[in-house]
Length: 104
Image 1 (cartoon, rainbow, N blue to C red):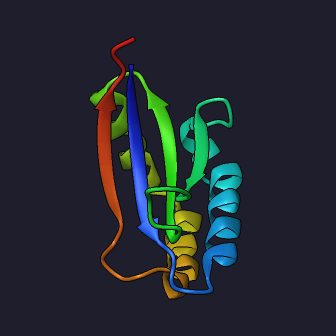
Image 2: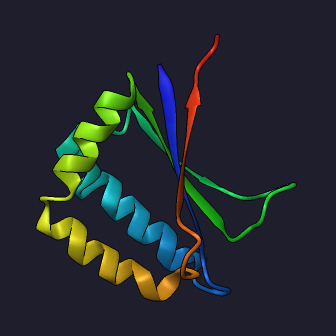
């Protein structure tokens, strides 16, 4: 099993909007590629991390599953419009994926 973590930085004062957009994405878009609430959690920086950091963490089987999900996302029109709605609330260029192997 692996964890795919997508991180972004909210602009100052925009964290509530980013969190609302992420919740919307998880329920309306992520679910279309199999990323259901039992596999995804939303994180926010608190102590020792930037408070502006917002992360979604998705449990995946392997990199092939992640690649297949990305291919599906690219074809979902609501994902494209969601990205445009999110953009004014985040610091440009801060989005990134990190992939971790679960070793327990």
